[in-house]
Amino acid sequence: MNSFTFYPWQQQAAQQWLGADNQSRLAHAWLIHGQAGIGKRRFALACAAALLCEQPRHQTACGQCQACQWVLSGNHPDLMRIRPEALALAEGEVQDADATEKAAKKAPSKEIRVDQIRAIESWAIQGSHRGGWHVVVLYPAESLNLISANALLKILEEPPSNTIFLLVADAADALLPTLVSRCRRFPLAPPAADQARAWLQEQGARDPEAYLAASGGAPELALHWAQEQAAPRPEWLTQMLGSLAKQQIMDLGEWVEVLEKQPPALWIDALQRAVVDLMLIQAGLSARYYPDLHGNYQKLGASARSATVAELGKWLQKQKAIATHPLNAKLFAHDVLTQVARGLGFMQK
Image (tube, rainbow, N blue to C red):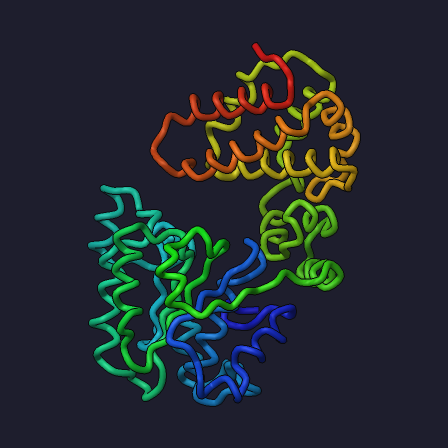
């Protein structure tokens, strides 16, 4: 399945968005938002392909016409994909010689730059090469910095004709309210568990139940983890929670050595999932992400105050917000793990 076709659980939403009765009243800007890992970027790109297709079938891209071939090759003149340079490289975008030399001197940006936004106007004013839409797909919208977000806001206040903007975000409330107000919101829901599990099995994912649980029901993320990780959760997290559950005095050094080599946002995310599970257990509910750690959660929940655990969850969210900033990885990991141990009522060396 290529990246410009809809996932099975997106078909109904796609028909809703692309339906014939909707074509005459398409908003100039849409904000596609929902849980991370459910395929929002795929949805936006498939919608763009459908809008640019010259022989659409049931309002979706045919995959055969010249326009679809251009989209598939990444060369459609009326489609602009805007994302951080680091993400574009990760997706396999080929750079020219000058860009490669520049990248060698400077780390690729993790933000959408203002010059990328300003390029939209000169591109759109040229007119459509195929006599149809111009489509801008921007993701993730959270990577807009304040300057680039304001530049985009100015464009959306007086949008170019025959141009549709598709913004993709996990959390709409993380964006400028004025920017959100200029978009028509289109929330995407995760698929039903049975449908997600069946899709993962079709993709050959091992242990789909466990990976789907760890991802919070997000099948695209679950598949990525199943392909890239040996287990649904990191081994260091399993060991650390086991030590905490046994009320052992912790030597944080070994965990810090592991975490300092990883992107902070990833391991903070794992800690957040464990804390959410613990709060659910303390409330008399079932763990959502790592249900097989139920025994450890029960022991931890009995010794830690629920209010303190809730505060720890809020504190971790703040740390995740600054995790991409330049910092000393070792000191940052040590500080976070220290707070986790204290929040759960344990001492450490």
